Length: 212
Image (cartoon, rainbow, N blue to C red; front, side, top):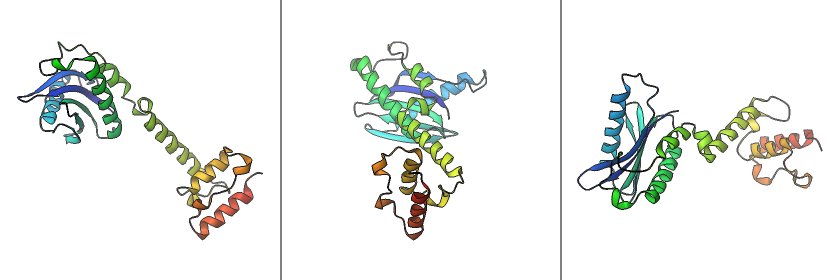
């Protein structure tokens, strides 16, 4: 996963104004970096120009995925990333940046500003931080940890954990039982974990084999 650019723009009536931008083109050769950065600047402005105020969209452009958010006040943000970068995290980043930008930069500067005149220096730090969405975004981190737990649990082949029994609900009950998170008085499988005769037999066997 890779973030290449993060831009703040203003969707004016005659044209789109680039207010501030940060780029990470280190993965390109030295001789390509200038043209790649120009392409990303042009693409960001073009996407904002074609987007309506109050809209969000993800647009495929060559091998890149461009995420755009135009607020109702015409302040806009664009993230250009690879196709593997999670769109939810990209839009979370855009929301955070635009909210912060609108508080630090007076609205009167938006239609006439430029990267040289706008005093807002947080984009480079955000671009660096969000290169790893798992560390930057709490929900992504939790989801990744849940996925890892599922992989570890399914890979086991002991008699108490049967892969065909790890369905939604039943798998959670078994995981809680396995890790001993539930108090002694609550160590029973709820009725909602019942997925049929096979699951009932698995549940009964699980309870019989579990330590007291």
